[in-house]
Image 1 (cartoon, rainbow, N blue to C red):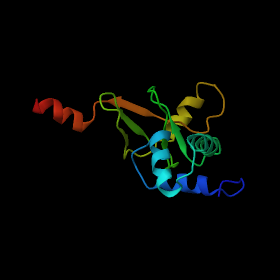
Image 2 (cartoon, rainbow, N blue to C red):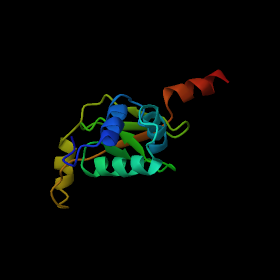
Image 3 (cartoon, rainbow, N blue to C red):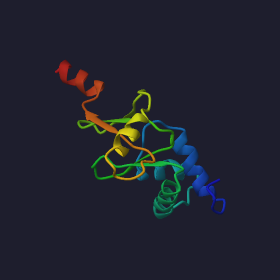
Length: 132
């Protein structure tokens, strides 16, 4: 699966992660994995998430909160982070590879890709604010 020895723990975590679009934390993934593998440890979850993100099989997302979030969708795409509730949403914007070309014009080196995170207040939070 990942170029390493087959692991039921890694496969379980990957299946859980690819089965959600909520960009969960390691703690959430741990709770879900325990439903399938009751004896899995939190340390095992963290180690496997680190390994999978280093190998490029999942995305590790850092929005400056207390916890990293993870994404099972490794295709190039953008994210929106709600600064009020912490929700992370996949944006349906087409990935613009021209940004790579623009960055390379700065003579910083060879650009292999980019990630872009938008921040703001999500529709749910805006609606709650209007309703008050």
